[in-house]
Length: 190
Image (cartoon, rainbow, N blue to C red):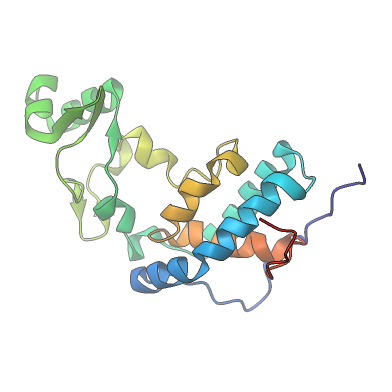
């Protein structure tokens, strides 16, 4: 197999990122089909190893995130069901000065063996800011999951999240510019 193509190293200068929630959703819908084709190319035709893709995604994410303030958006806190583990529940209960049982009764819903906040938006969201930021759940700490290994395998979910998260949307867009794939759909492509 020939060497995999090398990505360009930085975001184009002067490129305006989409950051407002309505614009993110609109652009996410516009680019969804193209993103699915990009995923197919990345998964089946790029020739790039997983470790190289994951490193490129982390690097690109960091470049994009340097220009985005999550406090300007907060869409993830309003729209996503936040999964909680037992450590999250105990940490948040301690933060609020209540028992784990009292916290669970007031804030937690259990379904299918999984715990999550019982209400949306997040009960600890104040405007676009998290009132328990230092003690926020692990799912919140890890979101938008772009630093995690296995990007190629998680792309369909990330394409869906691109409808609400400017970091994901702009990272996907930047990856499309950085990698040598073709936007046009050719008869031989899926």
